[in-house]
Image (cartoon, one colour):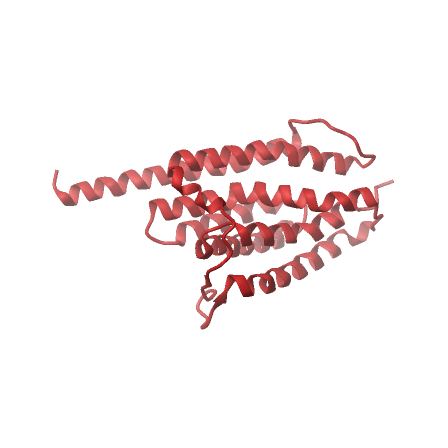
Length: 244
């Protein structure tokens, strides 16, 4: 076999592997819809039905995250789980075509706060018509639920695509596009923000968080910003006034 033919065969193999991996991870993400409707657990320690459902969903989603990490390990190799590290430093490349840039370690918090303010405002007005009844137990659950949800969704929607993009392609495009599109489509049916607006906001968030992984070589900013965004969402969602 000539050198050129060998190179072409290698490219074809990598392409097929990438397609199979993409389908498997997308199907794995779809399992979240299964466990939200039919969770693996049936705990009911709280008076609020919504809070109990959220608890059982978050616990049931963890094995789905584990499956996504296992697929990434099998397809990309042992060293490719390195994005699980909490590296937080790196140059922040300019977004889109504008000039300039920054550093994740100094500008990541500012970027995250802007996104939290926007998402928090949208979520507040989404739930406002039903009113709020704040309860200390529900408030105490916000941080652990936010951490669990951020870990689960980063392990499913971000780390696999960024990892395989690095492993099987010579560009950042695959990781950015897949992390954005799959995450956005999934959140069309999310808690809040949802619908078309929620899908577009989530797609942009997926782009930013995938970008942070690529530029720092770790998951710190993806996890931290995602968890911070989940705090206002869960605060308002868990403390809705129950329907009569």
